[in-house]
Length: 138
Image (tube, rainbow, N blue to C red; front, side):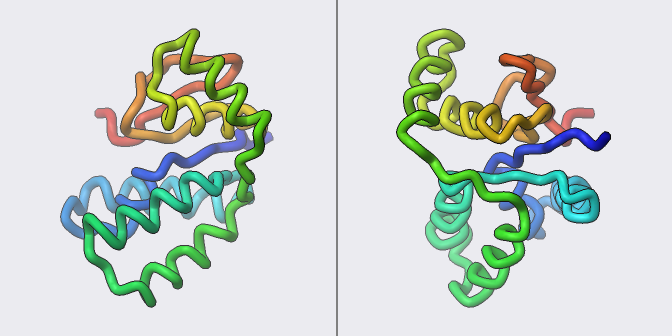
């Protein structure tokens, strides 16, 4: 059985960012595999952050962002609920992650994912059965 994978914002951004071709290739490979296996998840938070970064930081054309967003919506999208927010606060208190990272973790747990793909957290750490994986780590 294929593991369910939750993607953090940075993986989505790198997949379309040609400024780092190595990271772009890896991000494209892991996301494409999840499309093929129907195993990928994101949250409404991740999609919002993705749009914000693409607009503000990378200054991409909004029409290109809309096309990319449409593609990311082929992944299973977890809607942030009050329960997910409450769980995120608990994760924040226990593990000392930022609230926003805790919300990503909480969303991944709500989706019953086994892997959280991100560059920003502690590679190899497991939280309630969810393993954090940095796909760029050599």
